[in-house]
Length: 128
Image (cartoon, rainbow, N blue to C red):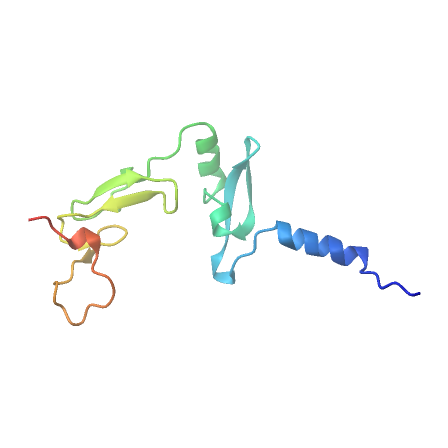
């Protein structure tokens, strides 16, 4: 009786493939993360890397993450900035500014604008 055996190397490759995180090509990036108390940098899925470079990773490891809200390019038109963990590391609250977008850079559309497509931005809603 002849046995059909799967070569060991195929089993090893399949196991490694199941254990690693796969992502779309557009989701690939370089970056750094804290792993076992040290910064490690490399190439992989964007969500694996919280820090864009070694310098920012080391600052975070030392307990002094940069204040991303200190930049004048953040939160235009009087928007309020607050730091968050997910990328880009900050969130602009644009309520009552007349603008929306990552940095409050886009003018709010009129409610009945036939040219505006998509969901109406929540930052453009005003409480009466």
